[in-house]
Amino acid sequence: MPETLLTPGISVVVCCHNSADVIGPALRALAGQTVPAGSGCEVILVDNLCSDETVTLARETWQQAKARHPLRVVTEETPGLIHARKRGAAEARHDHLFFIDDDNLLTGGALAELLSLYGRQPRATAIGGRIEPLFQGEKPPWFDLVAGTLACTPAGPEADRPGPRRTMSGAGLSFRTAELISLFRSPLPLFLVGRRGEALSRGEDAEICLRL
Image (tube, rainbow, N blue to C red; front, side):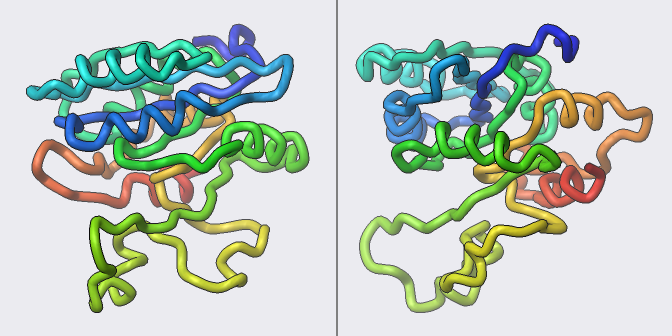
């Protein structure tokens, strides 16, 4: 969408590949979000070759939650997280774009706070936030050794100190939409494609940050 047609607000993009086991809680957390007056909000679910009930469950969950914002489902047939993200960005109608993973649970007020941050930081092209793990049972004794690999924010106040970052995790990473689309349309394509089916490759989020 041309930059001049982007309206104030936030487009939340959730990229899915066989996400039926996790998409329900993620969408319920999104359904209760609010945004400031004068800002729009939409949720775009990108179906990246799902062969399970992801799309059906997503629509049912959204309807049952009586969400105040629209949910749109679009399809991306090229496998790979970066291709799904490009499709989500191309579909965005608002001037801020927020990627969340299919198993991310947003805290209350996250979208309103994010838009407020962009208003207070006019030079920021991308903004990330704290990512905390949610365990099904006891925390494994080895978890802290690999927490960074799993995109979790380190413990302690230093990690929460506002300031510029060289790279940020793609789980819960937001952008000014026009800047990100400009990058995606660059003659030099991104080298990394992220998760693709059962292949858990990664690094495309870091490449996006470095290129921006």
